[in-house]
Length: 392
Image 1 (cartoon, rainbow, N blue to C red):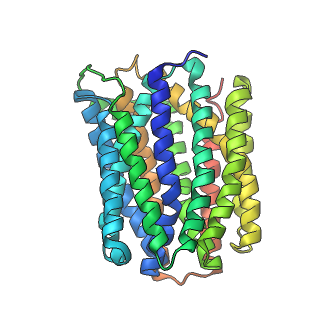
Image 2: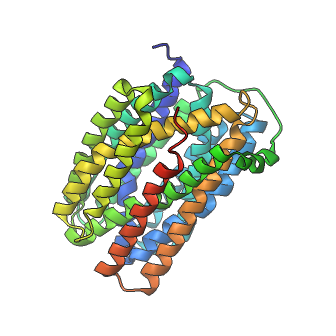
Image 3: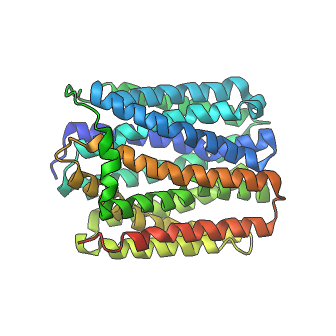
């Protein structure tokens, strides 16, 4: 398959960022819980990060239109350097800086992901997007498989929170490498106006409205699910290495699943892959209803690890193809990505806000956890209904 050097470089950048994130992202949540001893503080961090992510995504889109489309990568990774520097500087006193840390982290994600989404369309073609998404997902899964496993053992090998400082420092170094690679991406000298009205106009299309609602409901579940599960497991086990072990199992299965779907999946079967993956992943969440412990997490890791890529690969391709359908040869591409991010942010912010209130003002018990799981599971099934007529 003919893949350009720029596309390969973009895949390297996303892999470096995935490596840095995977070695630390799970344990950012655990670390914030340990220094604050409050579940709701973890959700507070994510709430503020989601708040800043959207305006920074819009700003990144404007910069991409007016300057260079790789600028967002550089700004996003620069903000990640600042975030991890703050984590290292403030250390065990981070509980007083959680809103600020959340705002910086969210800003970094807004700049980074807007640029990656745009460049993923610019640097791929319809005939190789499944390949790109599948292989990118495979590389990401490999890093997510190895990094949390190693990080968990590093943390428990050192006294106190010293292990956290090592993994945050290593993540910072990887983001430095990513910035260097991003500087070598081809520059886009095209400048064009920002068509703000297109962000509103696109919602007149029933196809886009259904896809937009899918973004909202899916990210209502997915973007808060991981911290919910991993912190709950830490509360049950008090051992970071166990979290790394389960992450290793889940991502090993995801790696195989991503590769198989991306390499051997048939175009005409994409809808069925999505249905099996979405229903299977939701069923895995229901395993937690009796309680989050090592046995139920094993069920979640096996079923979720296999099923989630079956949903994600065709859904990602559907997104990219739909943007390509409406963007008029790239004229409105950034506006459509921003429209997508608005829909995603609505789901993220609303879910995080609700969980902050629930876990701040109500006792954390089995009933509260089960209600939360039930709502998240239901939300994750809605995209299957909303996109059922969008596959040809």
